[in-house]
Image (cartoon, rainbow, N blue to C red; front, side, top):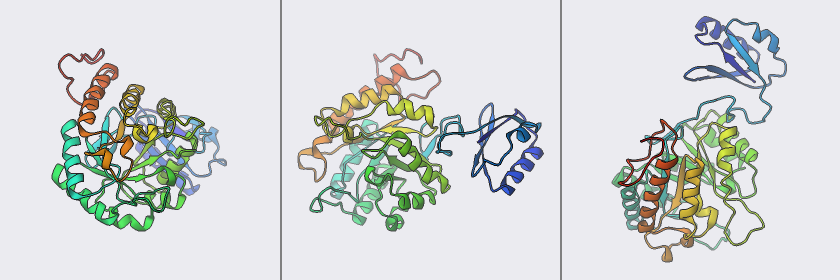
Length: 353
């Protein structure tokens, strides 16, 4: 249920309403917009009399939310959420590119790649320290040493970092990591979701390979129900009957998720296709579709990568892609949106010029 307040609602009456709701075991969560304030009610609202609420001077309208996800619902929060990830804003017109190797392999590798992706325009560094692999014999990541090397690359470049967490017991190791990634295999690891929900740290939540969009949003709800509203949704491809690509990248997830939720949506074309040759076109399509960012695997020597080399771009190819992404954003950005960078000579923004 959401309560839409009248403009300039009396503060005293509002506090009285909030206190009354709490006495009914309802958690009222205010969302203050530019033109409207909404109270999102979390809890069992079945016994709340809508007519009594409508009779209050400060209430303009009351609506029941039928979807099971409440905190992630756009009805609770009509404006786009902006997530602050180590000083870098994501969402609400702020477009960011996350780039780096699938796995941290050495100090030289991660620092070199970090410098190269930053020079190309990436704003967040990715790197896997703990790696969930299908085979128990495959490279599992450098683990705690990988986190240390990521932090060293952060110190060298100033880029915020993101890395996948697989076990709540590892949370202390991620204290200085700017964004926690919940991988596709753990999207419905509800105990892990509860644990990161208790943290004051941004979480990038990847869609499971067989998950519906509602299931993705319900997993986000687990995190947000714990008090952590800093969730970024990530589409990384789903499993279909198609075998030509590693997964089927569902770009329709961008407008659908944005219609249902206020949370930022990031696209992972690397896992979504499994082929470096397909990553640029899917990245550009995702940008045009209105994604809030991209997460792209970049390796300085993909042929010798310990993990997912075939889907990793070289730094040179990544730099070329970044120039094209900037051009696409300039062409499709909405009036008033903040472009990622000044368009290159010859690029034309049909709305912002």
